[in-house]
Image (tube, rainbow, N blue to C red; front, side):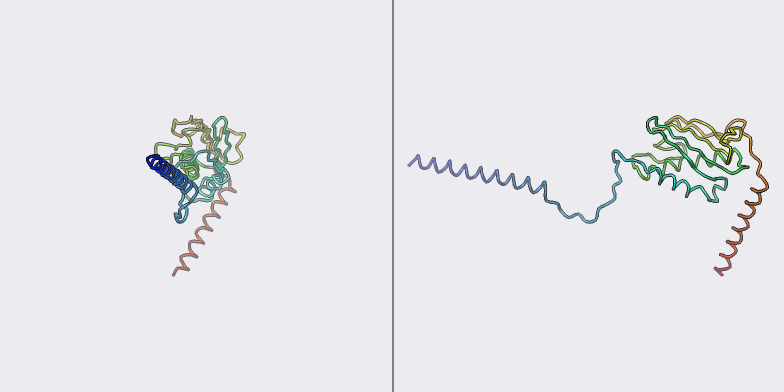
Length: 211
């Protein structure tokens, strides 16, 4: 009789163990493969690894910000070339004849910071610029900065800014020593006058239409 009781107890223990193991396996499968509904996907703002910047978009954003903008009337084009292996960026800003060194420095300061910030819009690990910093991109990349009037690539005496800014230095942008300011031509003056007249006419039409 005692022997049957022992066998019965052992059988019950085996059944309990089998049930426990089955429950563990079922729980594991449930956690691994069943997805719970969580609503619409939310944008991801944390740092992501391996992000490749879209430089075509950055270039387009730079053009939209500075070219044909009344805040930067001197700006004609924004050009750049990048060497990712050497971690060096060359930024070439082309301005109108007659642009002063002070105007060139103002344009350069805005362009460098804006380039960093549009890169930061794509990669949230990049620190935004500030009044005292060019931003996180230029903590990792050396910058060669040039501001020059149009058609003066081979006439460096007319370049208004020509300097290297080592990564992380936030070195102040200054005008090139001894830079020669190009005088505007009659054609440039006429073009500027025509643009001003067209702007005045547009403003007058908008004012009249609003009455």
